[in-house]
Amino acid sequence: MQLGAPHPERWNVSDLILFLVEHGGGRTRPLTWECLAFVQGLALELSRKVIGVVLGNNIDSVCAEVAAAKVQEIWKVSAPELETYNPDCFSAALCQIIKPAEPYAFAFAHTYRTIDFAPKLAAALNVGFISDITRYRIDGGRPVFTKSVFHDKLAAEVSFCAAPPHLLSIQIGSFPGDAAQREGRAPVQEKPVNLAGVPDRRRMLQIIQAMKNQVDLSRAQIIVAVGRGIGKQENLKVAQELAAALGAEIGASRPIVDMEWLPRDRQIGSSGQTVAPRVYFAIGISGAIQHIVGMKNSAFVVAINKDPNAPIFKVANYGIVGDLFEVVPALTQAVKQQKGNG
Amino acid sequence: MKIIACIKQVPEKDTRFEINPQGTWIQEQELTFEINECDVYALEEALRLKEKHGGEVVLLSLGGESAEKTMRRGLALGADRGILILAARDQTTDPFTVARALLTQVRLEQPDLVLTGVRSDDQAFSQTGTLLAELLGWPHATIVMKIDWEAGAGRLTIQRELEAGLLEEVSLPFPAVLTIQQGINQVRYPSLKGIMAARKKELRRVNWAATGVSGDRKIAIEKLVFPKSDKKSEIIGGTPRDAAATLVEKMKKEMKIL
Ligand SMILES: Cc1cc2nc3c(=O)[nH]c(=O)nc-3n(C[C@H](O)[C@H](O)[C@H](O)COP(=O)(O)OP(=O)(O)OC[C@H]3O[C@@H](n4cnc5c(N)ncnc54)[C@H](O)[C@@H]3O)c2cc1C
Ligand SMILES: Nc1ncnc2c1ncn2[C@@H]1O[C@H](COP(=O)(O)O)[C@@H](O)[C@H]1O
Image 1: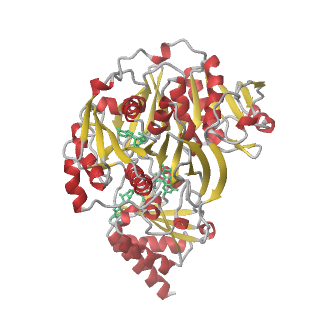
Image 2 (image 1 turned 90 degrees about the vertical axis):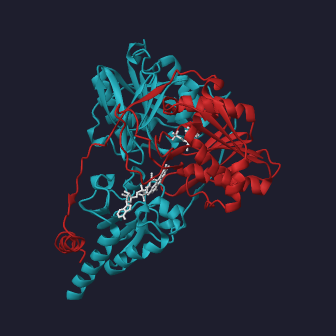
Image 3 (image 1 turned 120 degrees about the vertical axis):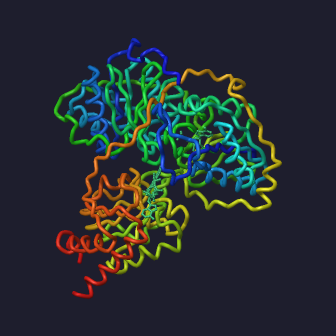
């Protein structure tokens, strides 16, 4: 492996760590505080300064809100072209901010939007981008970042070989927003950008509601959710029997819906429904972050999985490690018996 | 319409992984491999566009010699030919290096569209397709769930996924790069005839040196480790019957749903 590149920390750059403020409807989104918690920690360890960057149009209220947190400065990047998201304008604006500032790093939350523009920005700046970070440690003054690989079965420790600025995106839920220091008073600085020359290529036409929401799982009291561990469409009946015994709704992870074993409106997760039942049964679901974000507010989570290291056990209250084809029928039987006894 | 479908070879989903003695990657001997999940959807989408509008589907992959096997599967599904850039493991772990190598072949082929997956199952960077687009100077869209093209039109209309069950409909000119999300279509299985035909289809190998891509990587995977287990669950043991009985008690007393 070519790790012989010079130590990136030796390059001469400013001592700034920038982060993108997530906002919508004139307010910051909670992800902003997750990102802030991450960069505050990193800045403390590496003796750097934190600057929040707000991108958009009519963003004064957002700027004021983050300026009241513990940051060095807020940079307001306002332009009519930034009103509606477009990767060309976003990337161009950030390039114009980053090039003169030469920050040490720029951090984002790993959202669908970040997936859409951050690699483009990395290529435009000719710098490295480590995406979907869950942890980091400092090793001899140099940060080493951890991300999930191989379907969460392994973790990779990743570092930069190229000079800063380093682009970073953090996995949602990995750096709790409550850890962010919110007390402060930072000045808001306007950073003008010129987007007149940005080519008009990708045009937003409309936002569409993908699911007609035939079923609204957000009100379900009990959800029995199945994942790829179910193996075959015919096997769904194993879970359906448990759901029937419990009077529960059926839910699913994405692959089950992608294969059309269940309709799209049964999908739970970041691109599906968000649910918060009293009890959530996760059956043969590994617990990828995109699934977790859709069900983490359940009062109780019960996970049944044959892999003791499946990440679902990090969020479940109760777990049974075993073959779902043995465990689930036994559970259905026990529930029926209990109900029979009244 | 000429379409390049990028496909990456990855270990099968149910693999039990071992880490190599150096701690730098998994033990690859004796594993079975498959085409990266969303790349299968990307290939299917390419084949459907070709069936509707005519043209050619070219597979592009970067990997070891062993990647020929998954490429033959792609050819069996209906792709017309393939290009395999031969690379050592080192060269595959930095998305920037991968994108620059793929770029060399896209430039030679001059397709109308390049389709990649949203995310690789092994490294999960979600970067390669978008990096490639910027290096090409082409427009792009990620997490694509629908592609519409009216023959002759200079623009495509696509739907890309947003959070919470929303889709964003955008239009963009091509040539373009699209990163395809799983679930965009229902994928086909290779026919016997397809498998036979695949053996004779052209599979061009490109040596790493011939790409002219330098080794100056942007990021490096230094080490693989097993994830820290910060388990929160109380694991209920015993036979399935015992475990079920214990759980029913908890459902009654604690969760209060029975
Ligand atoms: C942009 C984007 C958006 C996404 N949105 C969503 C989303 O909204 N919702 C979502 O769910 N995913 C989403 N995903 C996909 C997500 O990353 C995971 O790939 C997916 O959740 C995995 O589904 P799974 O757990 O069912 O399958 P796997 O990860 O394949 O897990 C199967 C599990 O079943 C277990 N198992 C197998 N056999 C048995 C058995 N006999 N008994 C017991 N256990 C068994 C295995 O140990 C494994 O843990 C998204 C991905 C991307 C990139
Ligand atoms: N070595 C490779 N060969 C061919 N395609 C690749 C390779 N690496 C990544 N890709 C493509 O880029 C997509 C995203 O990969 P990643 O950026 O690693 O998440 C994958 O789904 C593939 O379509």
